[in-house]
Image 1 (spheres, rainbow, N blue to C red):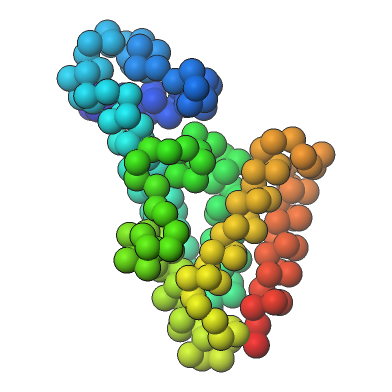
Image 2 (image 1 turned 30 degrees about the vertical axis):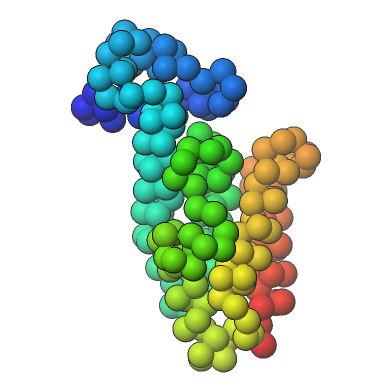
Length: 189
């Protein structure tokens, strides 16, 4: 692993440990075995490092979603839903860099999504449009349907992470599956 990649990995670890408020280049450098000045050879400032972390995190999320295979949109959306929740549980720093923190690479609704700047949302919209043409999903704006789906999952993930559920992992995943099934029922024609 090169120095830049090591710094990105250490930055994600530091975000997971300290959060954004206490995040520092000095701590990232120390974790990587480098001086604070050495970090500046790769990133001009904290914001530059956070932007690179955001790009890395979005790439990890994109790869995860693009690897999901399913014969129809309903099964695909169910798998994406599980992947989103598992991403929040298993990779909280990546998840935060994508969906919680301001890293200057986050997409802003609606313009960025309508412009195709989110590969995952674009893929989701295409799957929704295909299902709508086949009569498998109700009519409606594919972006708004994708947003509805994402918002429900994000809410569940954030409620769980903030300690609002007294469920173990498997029970929480089962709850998320049932909630996804409820969403799918509402999206059927």
